[in-house]
Length: 208
Image 1 (cartoon, rainbow, N blue to C red):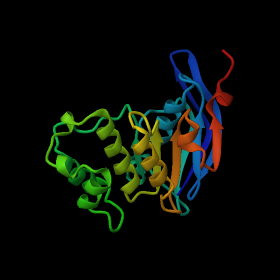
Image 2 (image 1 turned 135 degrees about the vertical axis):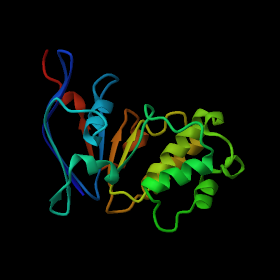
Image 3 (image 1 turned 90 degrees about the vertical axis):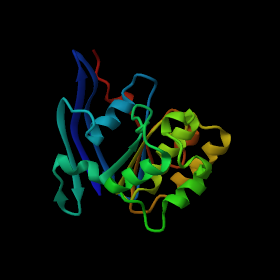
Image 4 (image 1 turned 120 degrees about the horizontal axis):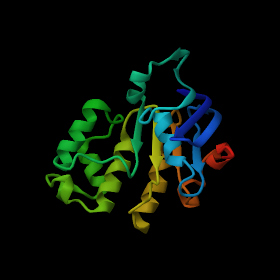
């Protein structure tokens, strides 16, 4: 999988958040978007994922030599972010089954395996709305790590995680398949210091 970003820009009202972003993102590599709060990191990730419309420019998803229709992008990616909510009425097992219906898990990864890795076996029948913020974040990350998709996108991945689960994050994120493309948004070096390339979103902020 390759994502080609050509002249990408996003504007809210009259303010350009970023403009003329030119990047090639390649399978097997990891990239982090950095910048102060409000710099547009999350906005850039959402535009690249197709969650948010662009203002100008072009994004191309290439699978092999084939350019994918934007309606098919969601099949290729999984996004874990604070602004994306889990379905709170589902139990944990129901949510795992629902997710796997759209994004199957990697070979050898079963519901039971995920429950054990997250230490949530005792909560498998509990509704997500009763989970703590840390439990929800672990679950979001697990759905991202274990889905069999070409592109993994993570925004503020260790938010609401304690030291133990932050260490788990570092372990699991570096176990992603060598064919996967990883995109991160972060201002915490421990979340991304293993990445191949760091991109400062502020470099694409035009003078107002």
